Length: 248
Image 1 (cartoon, one colour):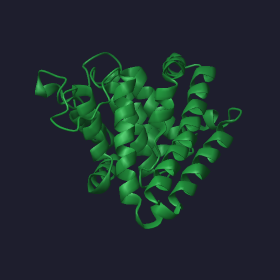
Image 2: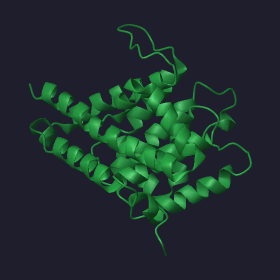
Image 3: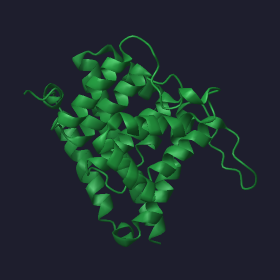
Image 4: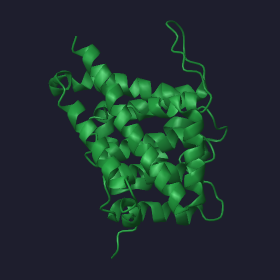
């Protein structure tokens, strides 16, 4: 059977961009501070990723020194970050490999807990035409494609942004799912990278690239994949700065 993502991999620059992202993340995992102390740097990466993901939705990024966090989007993003760190991540990766839709449902439950009025909406895709079919197609692609991990992460991220399967917190879920792919594929096994910072610094470019992906053209989808690979590479640089600080 032909790999559904092979045409993307064959587009100019895609394989090279994916290789650069992979090499940058591999180098971060070899950083002196991450050889034994990766749990500390991963925890910091999770917080930076969560705050940036929330900011992409227009939410607050403030973590008060005293009192509770009140922004529901930030709270959801931080819960997703916690699920993508430590022992919780091991469980979520196992679920993703076995049943990706269950993992997405879990991410939505965490991200949208304070955003919906009906708890029955948590983890359940919207009952709208085409959503179930496209989610099934996405799962089949994830489970069968041999494309480089940055390409798969880009497709999962872009498709969830375009589809908005849950109707709430879809952006936070999409970015969380992208991180999950990076871990489960071995691209970023300790979830050290922070591509969310890259996306936040280029918020309009991020929105434009996502819109291009949603149109389904080779140019739009290819551009999104290249943009994602650049974010993963830049996220490795962010991770390196975290490791440098942790290592003293």
